[in-house]
Amino acid sequence: MRSLPVWLRALHWLLIVNFVVQIAYGAFQVFVVLAPEGGSGLPLFGGATDMPFEQMMTRRMYASETWIAIAGLAVYLGVTEVLPRKLRPDAARSA
Image (cartoon, rainbow, N blue to C red):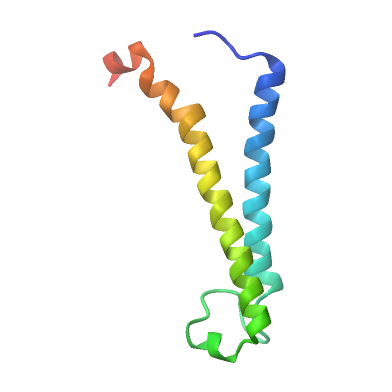
């Protein structure tokens, strides 16, 4: 197996770090910044009825953004890391 050029390996890690930062930022917004008054940012359950509409919609948008980043990272890692290892001829012998 041949090694990737340095610039391509750097781009690969830059994309991974970008996804991780997006996930961390979105989770921080949902669970810390947009937490309801006097409560934690964990699942709201019945507390959702007491939250202002604008705050709830903003929280949902950040949550959606976080899930999109999680899905993007999963697909990217699947295509760049998992799939090439599964397609390697020597992988079948070691399994």
